[in-house]
Image (cartoon, rainbow over all chains, first blue to last red):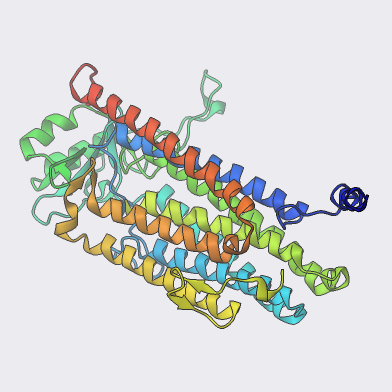
Length: 326
Length: 127
C-alpha cells in the first residue's frame, strides 16, 4: 500500500508541472535550440565558402594582400592586425558579458549594469570596425582589369615588385564617354558610375611604362600569385574587357568574384548578428537599470542574452580563421 | 544556478580557480594567448609549417585546431556548458559535432573533384 501511495505522490510531482528535466528553464533551452540551428546556418555559409575555395584552390585571393589597412596608418602594409584587434575586442566584450552574468547570480545590480554597458560598447566598436573594413574592401586600392572570362589581371611594377595602381599609371585619353543616364538616351536604363579611368587609358599607360607587368589570379608553387613577363603581359592585356575598381557582388578587383560575395554574405550576416546582439543588450541593459530583474528575483534574462552574445563571439572566431588566417 | 554550482577547474583539473570570476579572467588570458599565437603564425608563416598534410598546409591545420580549442573554451566556460547536465550538454554538442564535419567532408570532396575537372582541361575557364 505504502509503495502505491508513494508512486502516486511522485507522479503528482513529475506531471504536476514546474519540472526542469535538464536543469535548464524553458527560455534558456529555447535559446540553446536557436543557437544550435543558427550554428548550422553559419556552417552552411562557411562550408560553401570552403567549397568555392577548394574548387578554385589554385587561384583564390590571398587574404593577407586584401585586408591590409589599419586606422591612421596610411600606405603601411598591415595585414591582419586590424582583424586581430577586432577579435580581441569581441572576446573582451564576451568576458564583460560573462562577468555581468556572474554578477547577476549574486544579485549585484550595479555591477551587472556596469558590465552590460562595457559589453554594449565593445559590440558597438566591433560593428563600427566591420563597417570600416567593408568600406576599405568596397573602395579597393590598386584597381585591376577583367578579362572576358572573368579573370582578374592586376599590375605589378617589375622594378620594385610592388603593386601598381591603375589610377596612377593610366594616361588620359580624349573621350566623350560619360555615365549614361536614363534621361538622355533612347534606352530607359541608367548605368552605374564609370570607373575613374577607362580601359583605353590603362592600356596606354601600361604600354608607356616598360616596368609594368601583369599578375594573374593563379597561384604558383610557392603559393604566390603568378607574375607574367612583359611580353606575356602585353598579350594578356589584349583579353581585358573592363576596368574594375574595388569590389561589389558582381566584380571584384582582388580576384575571384565569389571571394567578395562570400565576404559580404558571411561577415555581413555575422555583423547583423552583432548589431542585433547590441540592440538586445541595450534592451536588457535598460531593464536592469529599471530593476525589472531585481523585482523578478533573478537575472536569468542576462544569462540568456549572454548565451547569444557568446555565440556571436564563437562564430567570429571561425570567420576569423577561415577568412583571414587559412 | 548559484556560483557554487560552477566547476572551477580547466585543463582537466590542471588549473583550479578560487572563484568563477577568476576563472573568467583565466580563460580570457588563455584565449588571448591562443589568438596571439594564431596572428603571429599568420604573419611569420614559418617555412617548416608550409608543408602539406591531407591536401592542406600544416599551418592551416594548426589554425583550425586552435580555433576549435578556442571554441571549446568559449562554449564550456563562457556559455557554461561545463556546468550543464550531460543530457543538455550532449544534445547541444552532438548534433553539431556530427553534422558539421559531415557537411564539410561532402562539400570539400565534391569541390576537389570539380577542381580536378577544371584543371584537367575539359572546361576552358582561364581566358
